[in-house]
Length: 213
Image (cartoon, rainbow, N blue to C red; front, side, top):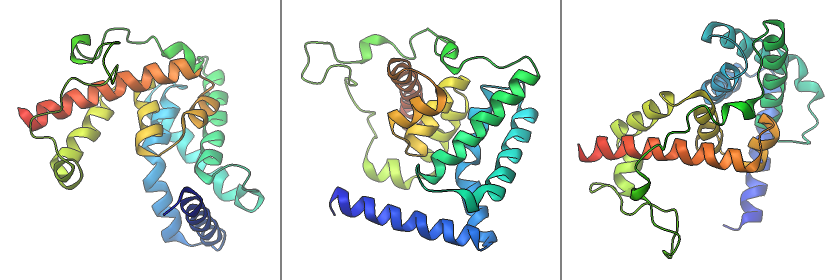
């Protein structure tokens, strides 16, 4: 299937989802919430103080989504539109509580290397920056089919510092592009790349321990 065909298929699926949501399809809405809730919570927690407040922001966002669906024009993807509502509400709530800080300031929240730098290939290697080796028991069938491995990966993501968790959830769980992440969080491409690298390194290290331990 070509990229154009994939784009058309995704666009058609999203149009169908929006139609179902506007028609009041509760199952469609529940599935949408289940898919995006964890990422939305992670994003909200970078702007407000405490999980309870972040959960309130997420709930307020879903209410705004329901109320605004008829006005959604599709200029951005549905998930990007939802996230933009969330970020605006989280920023407003953070200012009200004197807690809001620019997301970019969190990029240096943990400057320690995620793993030993020697685990990566050097600048003269054919694949600079890549891992030297895969876990001994690594394989597509294990990575995709083993629920324990998936649980280990998601547990590792949940344990990450807030900014790293937010970026890896958006990029690797939700499928946002780097440009969408930078725009939504008002973070530079360089900071986004550093946060994603640190997050992926920690998750990869956790998977190594799970698979080889």
